[in-house]
Length: 231
Image (cartoon, rainbow, N blue to C red; front, top):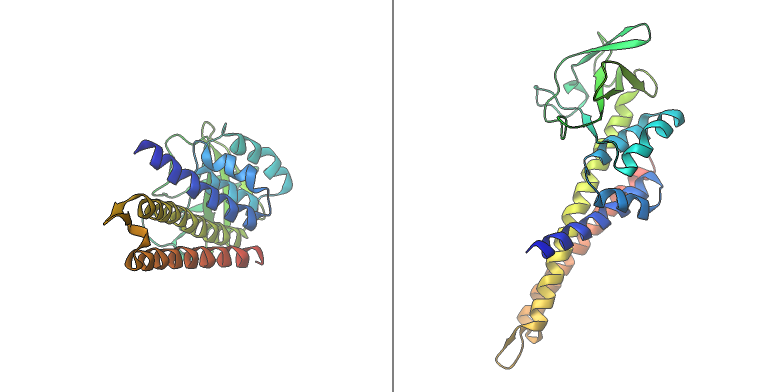
């Protein structure tokens, strides 16, 4: 069971790596190394930094995430339960070279152990998609650093969430592909009435239907990933 689970996770990670590589125009092999390592949730924070951060900020923050030395996460959702821009109620108040964030974030994956947290907050008095910025908070520091252009964080955050949705879709497709491969192999190995059950037309139809569903899912996820590249 353990070996099968590892194989499923590996296939899923490889498909997700292909998707993220296409979305972010990076090398798929490098992304796969990160996905197969510890702290895969760091990929969501890395996407946010790539979408919103300056070249200098990316150069400072991404190497540690890629090597696995930095556990990063994204703090987006709040107690109101909303997933659009109106759900960001945390306020970021500027005080010279620093910002004070006031509010609460919920469901922050690995938030208790993260070394780096990317936080979405808005300028006081702003509404909708206006005034939203992304901030990086070091896990062991009181200070924080704003990512990218102040008030222009929603576009980057929205793209990050879309990337996450497509990446998760690819992860599920990876699992479906692995299960399909198991079913086909079983149909070849299992013998009934003196012949492999895969030779019976009814089993062939079932396997063909499964293949159609898996390939349709791949096409949908890759098409969405391609559209993200065009944004």
